[in-house]
Length: 228
Image (cartoon, rainbow, N blue to C red; front, side, top):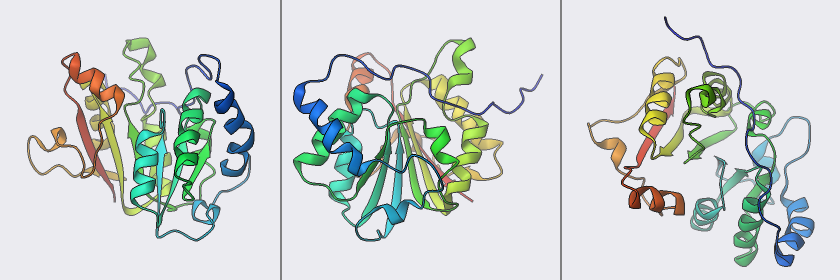
């Protein structure tokens, strides 16, 4: 029997881990309010920055913000919107933003699925979902972020010709995503060779999660999916 479309995704998991250090708590209190997206209403992400950017990139679940900060530093003309509800990750990202005074980063520390409903249509040029929680148990799979419903929500906000980039070291999750891309009317997988999904993107810097996966013998996969 063919499964029906996945239900809309929401945030599952912890909001906070170990106690923040004083400097981290200070950045949460003083720096985050100026970078946080509006709490409600429609959001035009390009309008969030001091100067209108050439493009807008969205990273959902940025962890400690290593990739987000790296890309933002490399591409000062691009606006980066990072989403991460885990406060310890937000604190680490704020430290990276503060260290080099990045002006092209804005943050949302709440549910990504709710934010997607508020972003303006076709307002994002590229979205990243990198090493999301795989929720490996069968009863947990409904919690995976890249569900049919969230793919449709991403399709609304990514412009035609834009990209969704996904990375994972869990083969089952990679297959899960490809199955949903294949049945989506809005996206197509861009791989042109059998091993294309094993090659990271230009400028890719391995994350600590990826390094752990490789040490444990898991092989990362990198999918680039085009918005039709």
